[in-house]
Image (cartoon, rainbow, N blue to C red; front, top):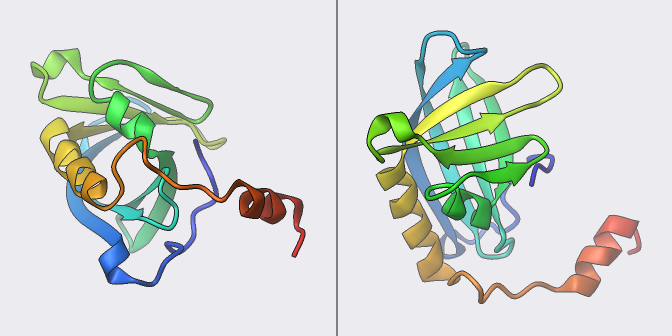
Length: 147
């Protein structure tokens, strides 16, 4: 699930989780580059996880993932469209691979599965998976531009 990134919906720090996780980027299959990333979760948008990558030269790129995609991708290949995730068999089960495919080209991201699991556990303390409460009417109004 890719959506335009923006600030987290809630300004309430007790309703959010942020973990800083180092990932490795391999743009177009070149050398791996370590990059700092923030994995953010906000209970007011309970199905989404925002991941901000802090690239060289002060550039920040943020993607929005489905929390379920991030959780399931630790164990088996998942994804559609611009985001795919799978366990990395070459790392003896220690890493997962995320492939992002914006119009400008694909990038492969490697991340430690233990770091993602720790982040997901923290999000599940706020909102357990399967117990997300979504206001469908408000979502549809937002999508349709009705105020």
